[in-house]
Length: 206
Image (tube, rainbow, N blue to C red):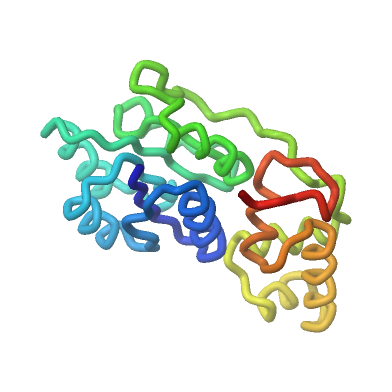
């Protein structure tokens, strides 16, 4: 299956691409600008689009609507990290999107979407309930850090936001990697956002 990703947060965008490709699917684009995604979609005609809700403005939704009116199939899932989103709800009502996914459950639900388990006759019409995560493995501060990583913040930006030093942030990141059994920040976020609740050392990638 071919998937187009258009998401502002760099780390989350990269994580989504990693998960998609690790399952044998093809990412036709992994970008932060809708115009770039539109060009890739016209060129490759993917099956699924994952679109940052903040990029789903009038112009992008009109483009998606026009594409559907031409009978070109494209499943569109809006990604949000901010709870209820009125613009996403409006896009659903207008038929421009097939579902809204919280960042916290996007990876688990994406598995079903890209494998065809969400069919055209069973489109989600509301936000997907949050799946259990690996919160119990991390301290409150570590959860803050991984949340900022997910938002695409650099080490310096995280340090500034939390009012700590770069070395403290680095220590938190290393602790997160160790607890989640991850080799990189991208893999750590993938594990954290997934629905696994296994302890570190038992997480394996297929």
